[in-house]
Amino acid sequence: MIRYKTPEEINIMREGGKILAQILQSTAAQVESGKTAKELDATAEALMQQYKVDPLFKGFEGFPAVSCISVNEGVVHGIPRDDLVLTEGDIVSIDAGIRYKGLCLDSAITVPVGAIDSEVQKLLDVTRESLSRGITASVIGNTIGDIGYAIQSYVESQGDYGIVRSLVGHGVGYELHEEPQVPNFGKAGKGLELQPGLVIAIEPMLSLGSYDVDIADDGWTIKTSDNSLSAHFEHSVAITTDGPIILTKV
Ligand code: MG
Ligand code: MG
Image 1 (tube, rainbow, N blue to C red):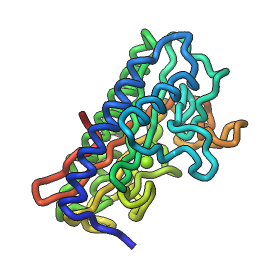
Image 2: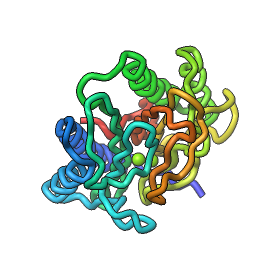
Image 3: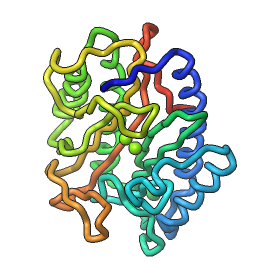
C-alpha cells in the first residue's frame, strides 16, 4: 500500500531533510586519508544527537551504526569499521537516515579521499547527475518507469557503467522503506503513475564494471561482484503540484 503524505508532512520532511543534509555534509567534510569509517560514523552520530534527531539505521535488522560507510567496491550497507582506514584515491559513500518529528528521511553522497583518477571522478559526476535526471522526471503524470528510464538512458549515454539492479529506491516517510520500489532502470510510461504526496528516495548506484553485486565477508556490505569501484547518491524527494521537491538538501 502506498501512503501519500500531506503538504504539512512534506513541510516537516523538508525541515528534517535539511538537517540530514547538514549532517551528511559535515560528515563528508571529515573524509581524509588516515580516517577510519568508524570515526566518520561517530561524527554522524554526534551530529544526530546535537540536532536531536533519531538515527534510523542503528538497530535496523541489527545494523550496528547510524550510517553506512561503503568504500570503493562497496556499493551500500558498509559497516563503519575501525579497521577500515581511508586512503588517498579511495571513494567513500556515506548513507544515513533519520527520523524527525515522526517522519523518516534517507540520503547518501559519495566523496573522494584526496585526489582521484579522472575516470573515477567521472563515475561520481555521472552518478550524481543521473540522480538529478531521475528527480527532474519525478513530476505528476509521469510514472516510476519514467524515473528509471531517465536515469538509465542518461547513464548509458555517458559510457559503459553498470547500473545496480538488485537494489532500488523506495517510498519513504512513515517508515524508512515503503512502497513503491523505485528502480534505477525502466521503461518510459510503465509502472505506477506519480501523484501529489508521493515521497520517494531515489538512489542510483553505478559501477565502473558489472552491475552484479554480492554480500561481502562481513555479512553486511554489498559490493560489486567484479570489485569495480561503485558510487551512490540518494535524495528523498516529494512529488507535488509545484514539481519535485528535494527534501534532503541544505
Ligand atoms: Mg540511504
Ligand atoms: Mg534508501
